[in-house]
Length: 378
Image 1 (cartoon, helix red, strand yellow):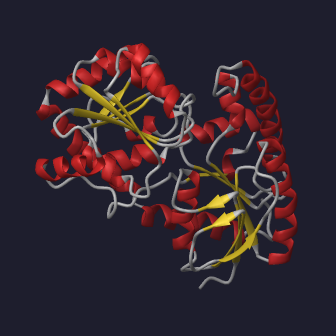
Image 2 (cartoon, helix red, strand yellow):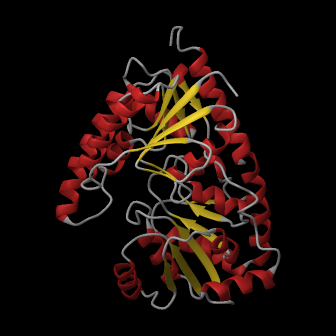
Image 3 (cartoon, one colour):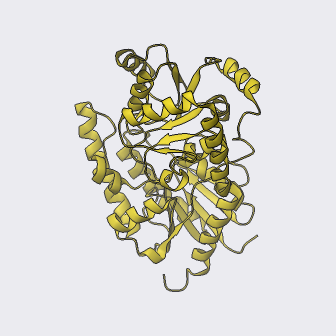
């Protein structure tokens, strides 16, 4: 075991969702080499100490403020050598892991996820608060290192928050290849579909995730409507009734299937033919890595993470915003089984450098660097 200890500060640490699962995967490995004390509302991870943080869950602005105050007290009591915060979960930390950049999202899209007027007004208010919180955290004199999960996120931190390049280390998110892998054959894929209640013989495009407005699910529905015999399976938390109604209006009635978040999402990947992820903004989405490891060609936009993972025309396509380009690529994949197979093999190959063991080792090295240099100049 190393001679330094880590206070890890995040709202939740568990193997659901995105950044929560990334934290759990990394910490489960870091904890084999260092003492880890998690400060979070929820922690579902063995082998670590945990200080639970209470407080309001809504609205998000009040929740973040109350959590940061309580986390600061808990960190002092934990007495660890260094602290690592996910974004601005902590007011200040020795190491910040950037799984999002609110300033970049606000600059490009106004920070908006929905379209209803009350929602827009609150989102603008909340984004202003979140940007301010991040700016203070990244300008803290205490900050020694920033872990950016993609090259694009690193650029955004430098551009919007002025984080010096010599403090940034790029450590991507990862994937567990023992969990996410292709179905062994067509018969196994068909059996999976039947067990999941999916069409056994149709071409299935898969979307996994929440925050549907930001992640472009309506574009995926519109693309599905434009391509005969394609079914879209949506796995995640959102307004299913509204999405079904939208599918009817778009002309995709009966071909859009919504399933709640699953404890075994790998079954949906293995049962599908392609992965559609028209998100407007990410830092580096775990689901694209999981889709690649599962042998699915990826149809997505050139955003943070995917621009590094997806080689256009090799393991998928980087398409312009809007449904038309998505529909064109789904048509190609639907009509050409050999193309799907080639891209599937290439997708698995492209995912191999992102194995969690390798990612966690690089993450540990950054923490070790921060701990060893804490008494010296930043």
